[in-house]
Image (cartoon, rainbow, N blue to C red; front, top):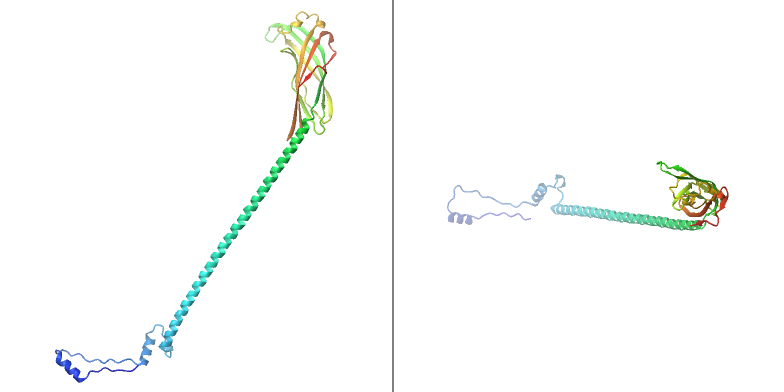
Length: 310
């Protein structure tokens, strides 16, 4: 850079002095000198905050290039780091989304498999219930075909007596006493189950008047077996109140008495085929009309063909 010196000539000074009013005090003249190249380099390096005394040999152009390069490198590095962090963050988000989708898929697969197993178990349970129901119905139908064979064979009137007396309240009336025995044949034809047998009270009626009763003991009849049941039917001091008119004039001649009676009872049979799950029940209502004759005491009266079974 060329060094230039600016100085005013004498004519310029004289003209300035003549035209301008006098000034007091008169200002001194200043000379402006351009700095040299060495001074520029010294000032640029000395005033730069990044400058260092150990790098005076570097030129300003080189320093400016190095500064701009370093700043550009730093910006590039920062942009690279930022893009790298953005890429990592994006990869993490994508991986998290993929993991979430995998978890959702796994959950969907799990629930789908669980629902499939539940449906399978329900179908198996339903099929088992249906098969068991059908099997039970088959057994029940097969069991219903094996109805017990009940026959009232005979009745024996051991004793029959009518005498004057009083009831529990002290009212005088005729009192009847009766002792009889009934024989019943029971047969279980079932081939694969036994039955429990019970009965309602066995009773003798003279029209609507009950004159004797008895109770059969419960028993168990095994499959394909038979037994004979003997039970006692008694009537002790039964007040007649004039109800049995046929004996009114024959109290002293009982051998001539003929009293129409009805023997009634119901037999219940219960068979358990498959434990308590399959049960068959049989009810047999029996009514046997019989005539009590005074001259046939202690002799069996056959009832095989005279009884009604329902």
